[in-house]
Length: 87
Image 1 (cartoon, rainbow, N blue to C red):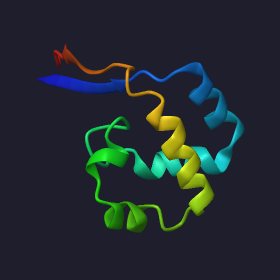
Image 2: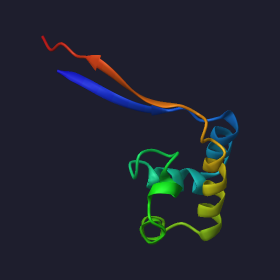
Image 3: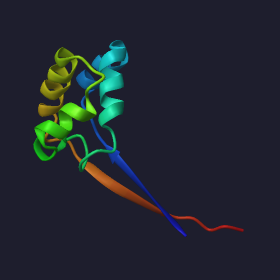
Image 4: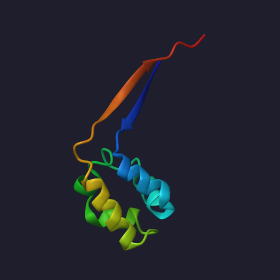
């Protein structure tokens, strides 16, 4: 059996904003799992679907998240696979 873990690297400035702004963190958590990762949220998800997903968040919060995420396009993402042996 193997387990695949997906990770994304984000710059410290985004991490700092997320830890200091609960609404922004909530918006990121809402989007997590949609699309192909945070680098593609605002490129691959249709605007109407994005509005539906983010309906519980203010327009200002979504705009801020969009701006912050747009700055991280050059940061890597990858899958890590581990073999799990069950005994």
